[in-house]
Length: 225
Image 1 (cartoon, helix red, strand yellow):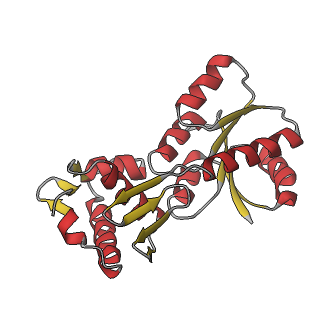
Image 2 (cartoon, one colour):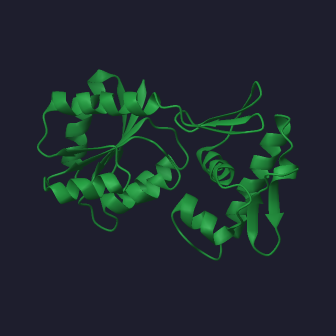
């Protein structure tokens, strides 16, 4: 059964979406704000997000951008606006599709199936010396061994592997992966880095040779031994 995250500040719309989607094999997680959705997606697996645009505090565009900072999960924007520029803006923010309200139930389900099929069929892999990350499935392997990373650990490791030898400050990692910046949460990054190193070592990968601490700044992934 697939999990869909529904994000809308109106309870009536959340209930309506669940009524449409649940009978077709989806588990619906209902969120009433962008922050709530970000917290959930940072720790739990989901297959697709249906995201309303017009929400207080954090609108759907900002929520979409923040999700894209750490996840490639399919995102469909839902909005009452049908102007072309609004659609273009949503797609540029990282959305995979865009549906205007009111929508037809069959069309909505077809769009969900099309987007998840398209995204999950993509070969989104990052590979480094036998270490392989599958971004679509959030899976990590070293040779034949599976590495059980949390979503945040996976996103951190993926960021490092995509930009080897680039030094990242703790503030930058917090802003990019967690979606916020603070001077009091350095221990959050340090704890996740320790966990990544330990899990890579356990799988037999030489983590200490590549995931380096840059003292006084942050961390980097070294491409040389």
